[in-house]
Length: 465
Ligand code: UD1
Ligand code: CA
Image 1 (cartoon, rainbow, N blue to C red):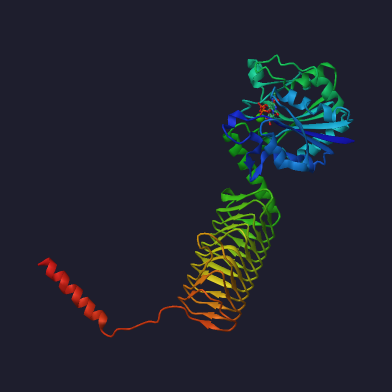
Image 2 (image 1 turned 90 degrees about the vertical axis):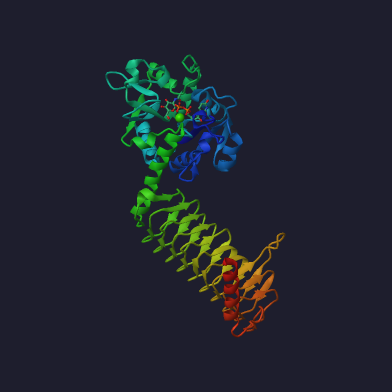
């Protein structure tokens, strides 16, 4: 059987009051339309068509090859939107899923069960519904006394009696493909909003004597349609809980789920502990047996096993096994740490690789650099990589020692096993195993401090008289 998918994503989403098109608003780090596309992938839809209009370029740019596209130039309603897929799909025999780009929480499991029932029961339409305490804003499911679905009525078109119905249309449907396009051609726009409503096909099919199933989910959360920012935050909360639960069931300890933020694509290994206040974003992966947090933000970063990260920010970094980072470290794009590297407090690393066992323990900046293995960067030592015009490279060989508060003025090389004396400003290459000292010699003036103090004190006494 051919399984087709249509995602409605052409609306602007006025109620969001946003420059960003509604379906591109992220939930747990991923645009809503991306979540919906994931659902269609998970049920193995053979063809997927996204109806685009507002923000078409952006939506298409984001989803790329994952779908085919049909343009709805003018947004005349959800029924009109589905009609735009007619040229692409009308000759197909099969089942068509129609789902909205603003319902990111529908689960693939629910959709899969709907598909099974729809096929087993030879239904023409199967509608996902839910019973809500507050159904305001949603289309209502009208059933006859026998419990059969006979129509869907939009909130704005409801009679008082219909408004009291608490079973709502989640706007996820399965249709017999041919019957869908046939019924759509009969939908008109004689309603309060003067739109061509997709739900009207249900009434049309019912009158034609076709079988319609209302599939009511127990999980109210999954039907959330995000029309405004309030619903967006609700969707975020539910999605967040769902993601965190999945990690916990996979063997990750999450100390404070209410204060932990994990994007959908993040991967975390077993026996890793996530302490309160962490944000794990984008394409981040974290290995096994790590301790992350408290209060760390990790974005698009690969972290190995047995790593500790305290109160730090990491973005587009790569961290190998057994590293210790923080508190208060900042790893910026291109930071690449070998095994057992230690990055201490107030250290910033950018576009720099550090070999195994290297330590940068406090108050350093390492940018545009290649640092070897087992190097010690003293407190306050920095690479001076920028002259106001160009970024220059620093190289430090294995086993070198860079003393505290040294300035390595790039471009510069420090050879293997070399020793840079504390406080040096290094402008020239230091060869292997050499020592470099580049600072003023110290002069001591015996008894001078006392002399100076006496002089200052008598001056002060004179002015006070
Ligand atoms: C819709 C349903 C309602 C249901 C609710 C569930 C209709 C008429 N109503 O209402 O029964 O309870 O979803 O969330 O279908 N879109 C287009 N082109 C258009 C209009 C809309 O592509 O011309 C897209 C939107 O981008 C959106 C989706 O269709 O992703 C749903 O449209 P929206 O305006 O949000 O419908 P609701 O009022 O929420
Ligand atoms: Ca909606």
